[in-house]
Length: 504
Ligand SMILES: NC(=O)C1=CN([C@@H]2O[C@H](COP(=O)(O)OP(=O)(O)OC[C@H]3O[C@@H](n4cnc5c(N)ncnc54)[C@H](O)[C@@H]3O)[C@@H](O)[C@H]2O)[C@@H](O)CC1
Ligand SMILES: Nc1ncnc2c1ncn2[C@@H]1O[C@H](COP(=O)(O)OP(=O)(O)O)[C@@H](O)[C@H]1O
Ligand SMILES: [K+]
Image (cartoon, rainbow, N blue to C red; front, side):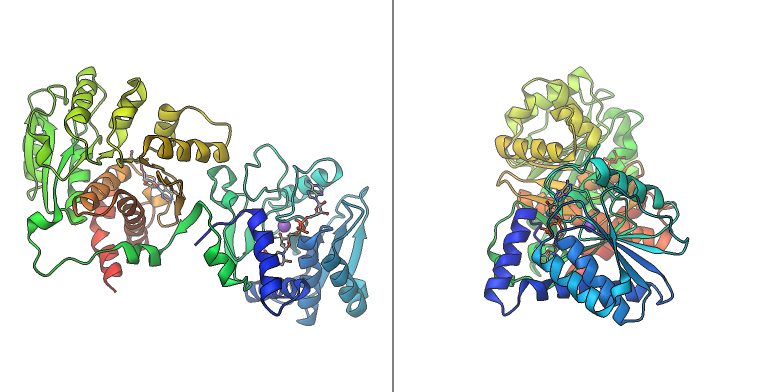
């Protein structure tokens, strides 16, 4: 699913009006109709509904929703906030329509008044500002938004299209934004919904289709997309009936150190469960027996130190892919060995955890990482690698810039893991849940990505598919075990169920 900018949404609107037999007013009626149906599904007609409307088309939606709710016998009231002199044509048309049918449902709030006290059971609809927001809200309107923010604790708030004050495509940190329990947004996700800094502002996001022209959606390029199951199914390659273990690649996993052999076990097990043909683990000498007992299908070679500081003396060229990082530690010798590895091995590899920490502290080393490699930092590792950023929009820019410049596939872990590619595209993953906020989840991802590269998926496809499958396995685990009780091992156990879903 593409994510359009506010500007592109305006263009989509105009294109739809021009190429379909529909007026802009009818499109607004459709949008308002979709919101009204959603509200009626979840709230009984006895619920009093107060709808705060701005002067633009977002306010127009609010006025239309008021009329449509009244048509269904809801006790709905529109409060128009006069934040600008002029209203848009469709706002005016909907004002007239409401006045004509339900004159007592319309109330004007001049830009001197605050929101009058409201009964406890009122449902609040925020239709003040949408994608037309041109600058951060200030003055009187900022006061109104602050008032609505405090009402979040006592009333249910539904924002139309986006929480008023939120910028669709950029950061809104330190600016007044309505805090919603639900956001009913039209046609597509807005970029800002995916920013961790906006967690708790949109509430649950519900995307309501309003029939924007499919040609515009298909033809318009955008760097931002949501990775969906249909995309993953199109990437997935079923195994050939004539396959043998050599078909699916021999992977080398460099992982573990004293006290951190668990990371090696988790990534090795997930690598096997994600379909690698053959797996060899490179571990320090303290880990030999552990791996041999815990992961029988894997072969094992050892470093004669307690970390990986003797280097990877084996002939690395025979491996289809190398995954490196989980639990390896950051000893100077390990950094030295990693540098040698980049000289010997020039195919895409997977770098995670301590491998990333070593990159962050060894000047110039990141430039030696083979092109097409997959880097999987969480936000702290990302900051160590690329520095602090002022907000999530800037963070995304830094992510994409480095992916393009260094020709790497780099992700940034989170609720909506962002994946940036050398072609400039950025995808967001939606699978996964807070049950995965548990030690070892990331090690499992390293194993999955390594396995997919070994099986011949391209770097981009491996990242898109691996992150999606990792989250889906986490979702299956949470469904059966609860988010609290699930552990990283359970993500591995449910990988099978996730693959079965792709077979269908
Ligand atoms: N294709 C779509 O997505 C559709 C969108 N519609 C609605 O139209 C909305 C966009 O409408 P508009 O372009 O009229 O924009 P808005 O309704 O978001 O706001 C525009 C108005 O707010 C003022 N304004 C902007 N920033 C302000 C600030 N910081 N402080 C005070 N006033 C400010 C502008 O001067 C203008 O009067 C969408 O969010 C959606 O609700 C629907 O009606 C129909 C279809
Ligand atoms: N709230 C969440 N929603 C979705 N995915 C999550 C959530 N919390 C964690 N995850 C996922 O779990 C993984 C955690 O990785 P990481 O922080 O590297 O863990 P570790 O270092 O313990 O192995 C990431 O892939 C991340 O996207
Ligand atoms: K709004």
